[in-house]
Length: 124
Length: 271
Image (tube, rainbow over all chains, first blue to last red; front, side):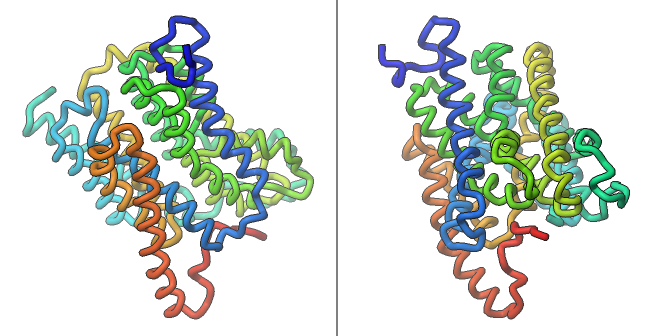
């Protein structure tokens, strides 16, 4: 069996999940961290390449954020889509209104989700 | 880094010469910063992550290994998402490494802030493993206010404690995840997108950084519909390229209006 095309739950061996995490988890992350240390000081942080790399990186993380909002797993997926979007938007608005206070953003976002869900939509 | 909590006022560190304070003391002082709002939000996010991992059929030990071995929460979430959708190892590796690509510029920009003359490359390689959004924002905000000799130890104290705490939290909550009421579990899952959105916005220095955040969120649904297995890669490439091209024009326009170099990338915080 070709390990590269095997999924996480496909093989029965005890070591398979750990090998999967080692390659697709640890190495997929730390190769960039190691490269970052190696390249530190070479690439200027106001160069266009650096800015481009950072833009792609930020958009990738934004994609992760979108995935968590549009297609969440677990019980958050039971909340209506508009409520999930509204909660994050309210948290962001509170962040700006409070002059960049992360705690206020989190509290407002959570209050909108949990308050409206329990109050208007009905408990899950 | 005015965009982070606790960064507005000077630090609660007495102004004694660095030589009189041992490395262990600086490590301990860094570790004390575990009791802070960003660290607590991150711990709560790992409660949500453990629930996600459990729902995807990932065991307790594997979840703890993921938390400590990957550490960056977005990568953890991408990996769990790939496991959940049954993606093969090669495709999972590509998706995770593309989402982890941003760690390289993050590490590249924190290393010049963190190192002193005597800091070895081995120490930096070890510490680089602990660089992720929370620790990076913390380091970029706090380290410039410390004596250079203290920085690596202080960062190590904070970051190693943070990672260890997250592993414990992930393990305990994986065990308890089934018992969480759905409303609470949903609230914990929401913490991650909430916290990432505002902390990335706070760490943004250029128009392109902020545009990339907005474009990325806006691009994802279309990419998910067009390329369900490679949506993150395309989101990053298309959203990021568009943000770079538009942002460069905005930043260039701003630089023309601001004669001093105040618009230089603010990430270089040197002596």
